[in-house]
Length: 140
Picture 1 (cartoon, rainbow, N blue to C red):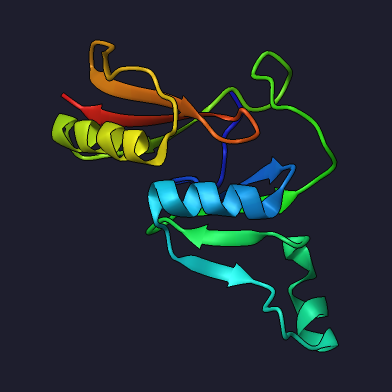
Picture 2: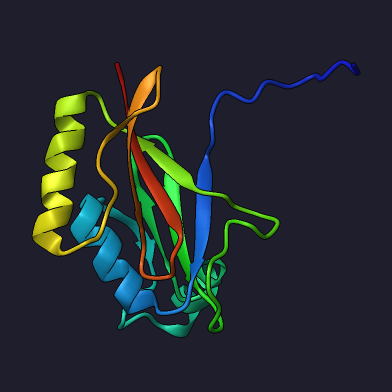
């Protein structure tokens, strides 16, 4: 194997493409409650819009060390059997938190699988409005 002269310590950010930015924002903000780090303000002038053009009309959330962005695109449907993303998992601290998350999803009317014991950890699987597979995981 070739020598690599750099070290990657974690994922810096992930951006998901979505078909309806407002619907997706409502979903992610109600499910996770993440703070918005960047978005184009409604009253932004042209210079600000140009500076934030890399957002492509989307939003970036701060997950506490990792950023997650949403970017609107043309109508399509997520399929984990195509090349690209299979799913994205978010780490929780305990099984109790997973149970609380399942109850929260129930309150929001978000369909989900039961919490599963997969050996080294527990997982809770559900999907966003564009069918992107999401998972919450907690250690044993």
